[in-house]
Amino acid sequence: MADALVISNLLLWVVVIALGLVVLALVRQVGVLYERVAPAGALMVNRKLKAGEPAPELALVDLTGKPVAIGGASNTGRGTLLFFLSPNCPICKTLLPALRSAARNERAWLDVILASDGNDHDHAQFVAEQDLAQFPYVSSEILGMTYGVGKLPYAVLIGEHGNIVSMGIINSREHLESLFESRERGVASIQEYLKSRGQGH
Image (cartoon, rainbow, N blue to C red):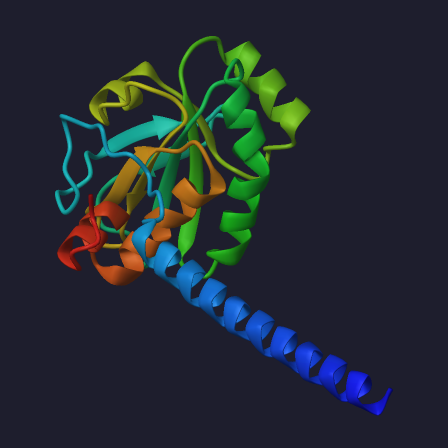
């Protein structure tokens, strides 16, 4: 009986040690996979503008009639996030919580401007329904054309000196945050950063 108990304890320890080794191997493998799978940044598909160039300067008005200056060096030392959206774009609506969160988290240095084109009445209704009154909302076809916007939702991050920091199609919170990550790392996009480190595909 005592021998059986000793054998069972030994077998139990062997199983525990084997399970521990398996867990360590899995943790290591997860780390390897994490390094290989590059984070997805905003997709840059703009043939008109390039990161690092001065952002086109436009003097516009928002839906409430207030003047909105876009581009050019900021007198207040703040950057600008131009977020292009549409009331008819389902993805745009799902990204609004992420946009509000980004505006709060980056409020120390960033102003957010919403941009679209079309019927002002539709946009005013959209602002009311989605509670977007905190952001300047510009309805201007010229703005979208000047900034080479072809697909929505789209965002352009303009630095405090008036240069384009990063831009691209925004389909997720991760894409939106990649613009700020690009600014912190001093690159045009996360893809460029990964490529410079030999992780791009």
